[in-house]
Image (cartoon, rainbow over all chains, first blue to last red; front, side):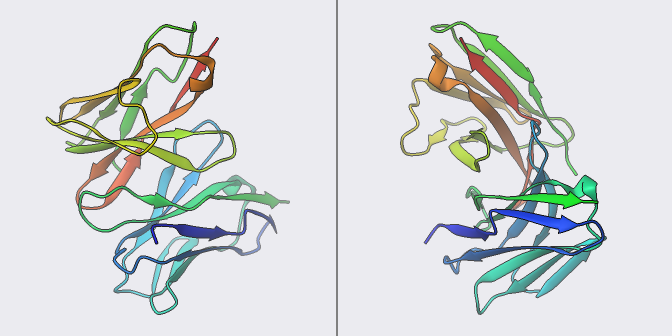
Length: 112
Length: 114
């Protein structure tokens, strides 16, 4: 019930295309869903986050879509660029003093 | 976003020695910090939750006597790997909670035990 399932494991997208990464969760108590971007040898960086009271949040080229009934959320990267090539992790938590539960990550490669 | 630093960024030590890693929240106070371990091409594995002024809460399977965590101030948490062995070689990352939910991560520490 604590798991967050992330797919795909790896993704190759053409420059300018849309990258889509999906996550699903079981624990209905989760109320905060962040996405992190990690480059090799670096710590994860908070990219964008959403709460279940909204269905979509957009920041620049990054959009989170949230489907509460399906218990799914996804990250869309519009106009993908080679610089977006990184590993992306979705996560979820219950507000308060609880740790994040991470997905297994998606390795994105954007090719020119 | 808020800034979290880690020191050192990489360390090489001999088997049997102890290594201390520092995690600092630079521009905010963090009552809660987390320590993770990450193997190549894998997700982050939570090791422990560190609360300022109290004992850390370790995840199942993590030896608290081997991975000593101290959170003595609102801006500093330390992880000491005691009697390190080659199997302890890994990428260690800390994070600090900002506000209710947001967590900001440090840049990580690459530990290599010879």
